[in-house]
Image (cartoon, rainbow, N blue to C red; front, side, top):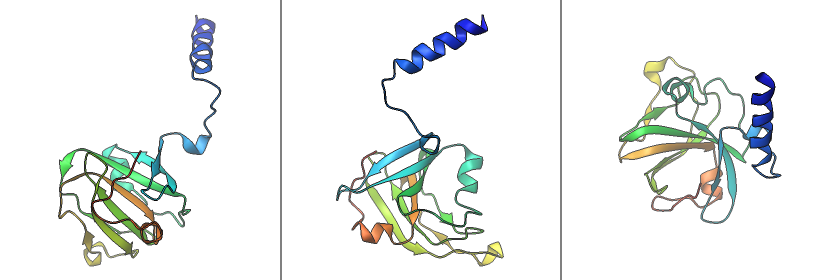
Length: 148
């Protein structure tokens, strides 16, 4: 029976075409900016993963990011507590339109009560975190739509 299941999986994967997926592309989204540049963002939706976010990471390649999916639209504030690198924070509505953007949010090692919160002024359903400077380099502004 296990052999049949394995064979079925192979057939299913083969039916996907000849596009192979690298391990670092699993559970990611390719995001295209209005200027045509792209970043690959980790897709995060589980509440514990959303809460951890970019904490404890020592770097973020400018071609990478993290896209947080909230289950519903809301006013979501983010902070940089225990995040080690500066980030651009971008709030997106359900259509992928930028509703709020914070450039170069600095890391905040703590204590947590000294770390400011960012965003939450507008309803959003997703938040994209990018290496600091990426939003400015690509001319991102509220009202622009990202494709993913």
